[in-house]
Image 1: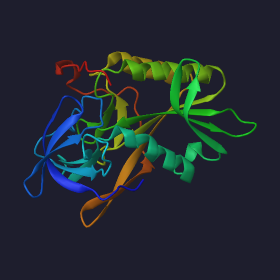
Image 2 (image 1 turned 180 degrees about the horizontal axis):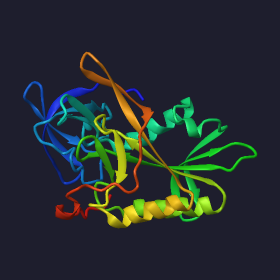
Image 3 (image 1 turned 45 degrees about the vertical axis):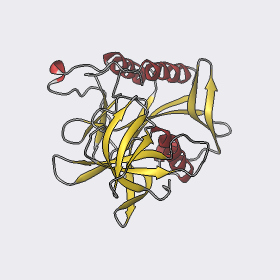
Length: 258
């Protein structure tokens, strides 16, 4: 997925959930839309360089959207993370259509927003004579420890209900896939966040035993002259359903809905 021409700035603060104050290179300050309903734990870091997309739509209240944040890594270097959760489905759709996700190749049609009995899932893939494949996408940006990614970053009852919907489809003979779109270039593997949402973690382990496939793919961000120009799914990542942080008992849970 290609970005429009992005503009750099420095994050001053995120507030009221959907707003962020950004300082641009010329010293001016703008208010940007923050399209992320989660806690943004580990990616809401004031003082970091961020990237904004502009809008020329006169009907919009805010002319800027916060897209990416640049974060230093303990092992050295910098990583880019997408805070724009609305991009995840577009990134995955492009990967599905171009065959990047090997286990989901070969389907004839792709339908967005697939309505099922008790939910609406992100994609349905169909091929004559084969079970349909239902795919639910979750964006991962929470990195804790050396390269370890976790989902969710806040208690997510909605996400847990999606797991139950996938399990019911698997029980009916359909393919049911949870796909973690890892939109943080410093993350090397993914696990459910037991220290944040134990119920989601336990549900995920249960639905995996009932036939739900759990995949994770990492994103690659391409840059032109130090400016991000595109983001795409690039490689499969390991998923562990049992990993937990060593200091999990000392950490405060998050209770915001995502």
